[in-house]
Amino acid sequence: VSSTPALSWTNGLPSSDGMKLYISDNKVILTEGFDGVVPIKYFEKIETWPGRAPIPFQR
Image 1 (cartoon, rainbow, N blue to C red):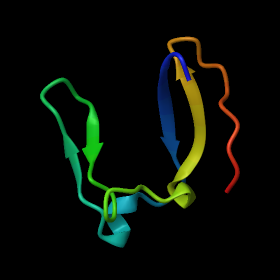
Image 2: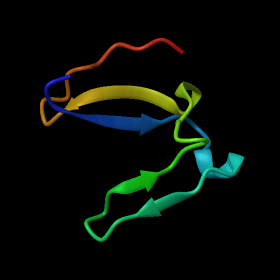
Image 3: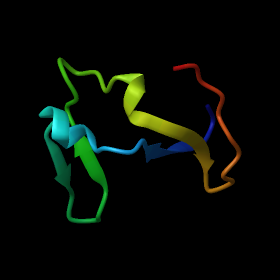
Image 4: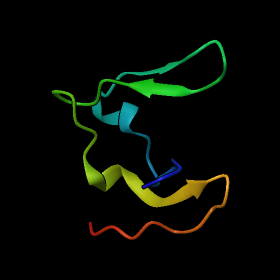
């Protein structure tokens, strides 16, 4: 992907499963995931930014 992806969470935040989320000073949500990985089940959609073109993925 040549642009920065924008992610939308599914219903129910990963924090409810114990994933730690942090907000940086510039309001970006950061996480280490679980063992360095954020499971795909947490994503509703992925888009390019700033163009907002959908990036296909499989759950």
